[in-house]
Image 1 (cartoon, helix red, strand yellow):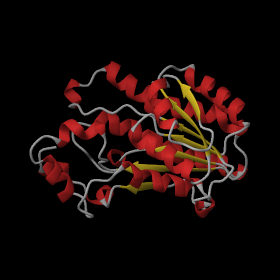
Image 2 (cartoon, helix red, strand yellow):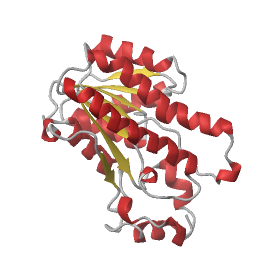
Image 3 (spheres, helix red, strand yellow):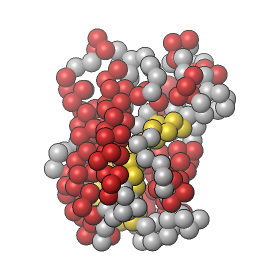
Length: 253
């Protein structure tokens, strides 16, 4: 529970779901966390449950000016950053024939451009032993229907992860991706309510259950810790085996 004592972390998309769970897991492990998302009230609610003097920074990362501003404020508040978790993302489930330029631009702005700009702005403040964790998706690992644009954005993030691992490795900074499967969050609530969807997802998951935000957060906390000190350039699927076995075409999703 003290594996990250004294570490300083930035978590984007921290106001709900996986991001909130990651902030909570890092806090439990002893890190001081900067929580980033668009909604200040929701961030404050998550921060109220943390114990290591959390910091709330509200901002829309889709704005190209926001990553640099967030980085500057985080470094000012913490004095440096040991852990960066790029979790904020825009999701989309739409047939390619209905995909337009605006949707693609929104996906790339938040899912690819923002993490890269934030990493670039924070690199000078990350010491040896630092860890960057990008939250990707099972859609970047296997084919999933009506998610081509979203999968492209997450695949780009995984590719960037590998390049960054090579670039930053000599400075002792590790870079990895975590690829969740189907996580039981508000994002999936509408689809989960469709008859047969919950059962189909479970059938496609070797461990026969939906994953939870904590399942993902615990892997992120591991990658942030010294227990993962020789792990870099990896994309780790956290979907109960779904990343190797998914077949959404066989059911109603």
